Amino acid sequence: MIFLKIECVEGIVLSETNYSESSKILNVFTKEYGLIGIMSKGCRNMKCKLRGVSRKLLYGKFHIYYKEHGISTLKDVDVLSSFSSLLTDLEKVSYASYLLDLTLQVVRQNDNREILDLLKDTLLKMEEGFSPIVLTEILELKYLTYLGVRPSIDCCSVCGSDKQIVTASSVAGGYLCRNCYHNEPLVSDKTIKLLRLFYYVDIKNISKLDVRDSVVIEINQFLDDYYDRYTGIYLKSKEFIRQLKRINQD
Image (cartoon, rainbow, N blue to C red; front, side):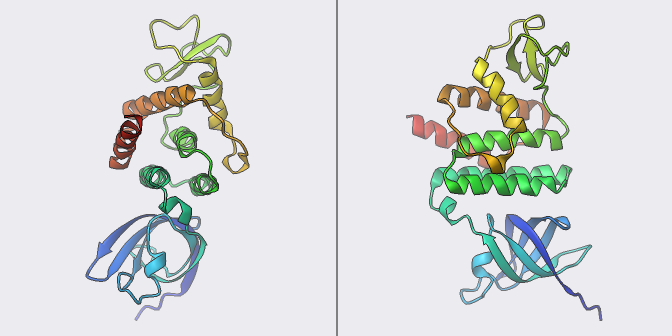
């Protein structure tokens, strides 16, 4: 008989899947082991103590019977943040759900533990009331490095010059200077500056996020097209956000 010791891992539940009649398997991205599967036995039963902590969008310390090759088993959770205010706001929970889905795709390609802090800090700022749209753009931009397709936002993507940058083009792979620009759509100077700022900003130190709607739209268009061209990631949760935007605009 093999006896597994209880280990404590810190992480965020990225997804959940029902298992058997009363259990769930949680995909948890952890600081210690990266992405792992954890069985939460009986958590769908009304009286189970694990019921309230066995769900997506929960950040905590998970006490588990760890299994290196296979599914670990959950014993208990010390909740660090339940992100409860996000769950009561349709817009916020929609963006949070998308970020969980996106993170799951990113860590399957690159399980760098820095990603956990980026996700955690983004969700905490969203919980504090900062714009979920802008925070999502910041995290999307940062994730491109871990996907191996970082755009050129320090200099022109064609010639390497950092002078006279006039636009950001997903087709070109980032910034374009005046000499290399042809017929690509132009974006505002503010959008050019904020793309670089978003990439380098330390999310946990954000204290203000006042961005004009027109700039948010331009950055969103750049990132949407960039993801479509270079990542191959398609998520239903992203499409839901697009539908939500269309409804709010009507």
